[in-house]
Structure formats: C-alpha cells, structure tokens
Amino acid sequence: MRRRFFVDHFEGNTAAMVGDAAHHLGRVLRAAAGQLYDLSDGKSVWLARIENVRRDRIEFRLIEPIPGSESTLRTTLLLAIIRFDSFEWALEKATELGVRTIVPLAAARSEKALLSAAEKRAERWRRILLEASEQSRRVSVPQLKSLEKPASAFAQSVGFKIILSERAGAQPLKSVLPGAGPEAVVAIGPEGGWTEEEFAAAEAGGFRQASLGHFILRTETAVISALSNLNYALG
Image (tube, rainbow, N blue to C red):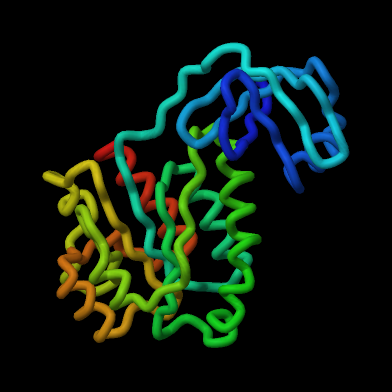
C-alpha cells in the first residue's frame, strides 16, 4: 500500500512538500523522482508522482484523484491532561478512530507540573496527530486546540454532549446514545476523576453523564472505549 502524506495545498496539478516533512521523505525514506505517493491537502486525496527532490523541498505531479471520505460523525474530544506518555498514546488512538477536534483540559485533578509543561508540547502533539493521520489514511488531520479549563470548554461545546462519569447514577453509554446527532462532544477526565465543580459546569453546559461499565478504566483506555462505541452507534 502506498504511503500517504499531507501537503499545505495543491496548485493546479502540482504540489510541494517542504521543511521537516520533505527532509524526512527525501533523506530518511530515500524518496526519488518517479515514486508514487498519496497526497492530501486536508480536503481531497490525489495519487502523485515525485518530479524533483531537493534538500528541503519535494515537488510532485498530481496524476488522478483517489476516493476518500471522512466519517459523517464529527467528534470533539475534551481530554484532561494526564502523564504525557499516556496522553500522547490517547492522541494517536483518537486520531485513528476519526476524531475531528481535540481540546486538552487543565482539569482540577491533573498534575500541576504536567499542566505547566503542556503548552510546550503542542508542536510535538501536532506531529503525533499528523503521523497518526498518515498511518490511518485519513483525509484530514485532527485540529488541536489550546489548553483550556473544563468549565470554559464545556460552555463552548456544540453538539450531542457526553461526560464520562464513575458516579453510581450515571447511565450506561449505550442508553445515552440513541437520538444523538452527527456532531458529538466527549469529555474524559483525569485519573483522579472530575470534581463536583466540574460536573456542575458540565451539567450547566448541557452534558449528559455516561458510564462505560462497572470497571474503572484508565483515561487512555476510556478514550478508545468511548470513541469506538460512538463510531459503532453513530458513525
């Protein structure tokens, strides 16, 4: 199967890859003129042939469009900051499962040292989203928003809104999903759970509490479980 890469835009029947991406393809993967790759500009995908390889620029000729589509389900993931190795693994899997937008949350029970360092990790996180999108052959790369407080993110969210909860009264996710529309927002908290104030802010923002079952899941496991259920029920 051909590798897929992203470029900023198409120009007529040509495209160019520059910077780090061009260096990786040209120097690490040993790209050469005549090789074929799939290219996406985030809107459409084309079969492309390399015309010229330079030090920090690779030029392509577009040959023919390739059918490609994103899921009709538009999902936003509000994800509390957790240990960076686990958080980054969750970003990768959320991308593979079709999430459109990811909002990192500075939850009350997120570790303060992690929150202080989170903004500096943004470029690394965008690179993870890009590489996961290439691997999973997506048409577009998920959008990564800036770090937000939960109350702010809850208030601004639009769509069918769910907050995962370990409370005894939370309904199973499968009983919450019927009637949901094509735009969904899922909020997943840190390993210490949401505070009462965060639950109150979510309720004020129109979020419904939902449970993934009797077991207590790690945050990154909950990401996969919740998104898989959403895709099965609504995608």
